[in-house]
Length: 264
Image 1: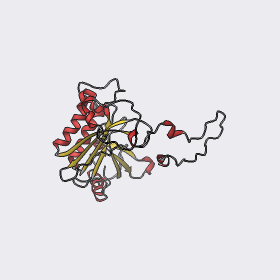
Image 2 (image 1 turned 30 degrees about the vertical axis):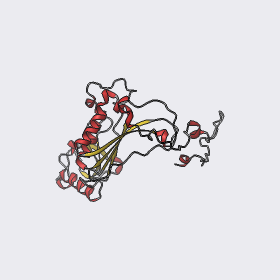
Image 3 (image 1 turned 180 degrees about the vertical axis):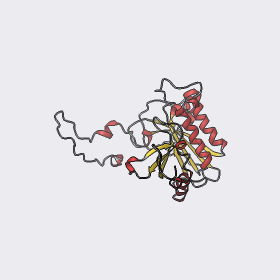
Image 4 (image 1 turned 90 degrees about the vertical axis):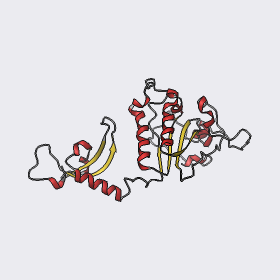
């Protein structure tokens, strides 16, 4: 109950809400609903708990205070307040490593439903720019159903859209790692381009046949000078040698400067 509504002696197993301090949606072993982190009157912060919104039906004043404070501190943005919304909905329901993917109805998987939630947030907040990342299987699984869904949602909301497939190795990382990136921009904004490669890469596979034109690369007539591809040796060759009889828990590691990302 709200602190303001407290009257007389509390019944057994009845507690008073001092303040709501945080908010989230769902979680491991939780219902798919809004949760508030509750600070209880007469208890320390170590006793704070996450409670589903349905358990706080007697605390409308505390919820109102939380929302008002969130708006005042810009913690809870309002439509039109957001410049860029970035996200990467879970890939477990899409990845080819998942043998139990729901091919017949992909959006009936709770993990894949997060894509719907992401687009609903875009619809509500109307950010100037949207950037979504996911595995390339989003363009292959179930004939690219989820990738097409994401793109169609942006277009239906009158966003300019650009789909790109990028390789991590093309940007100075010692791995191939192909990923899908989807840009969205309001019609009043300039739709960003995907950055062109800076490095060569060791090829490990190809893009889906229907989306080969979406791979971010130079035109065939261009002949750019790219840096050499990085491999695993470039990433770990300066690590200290591991000795079989090493007894210390910690080992001093001097960061090498010959690779730019070593100091990141």
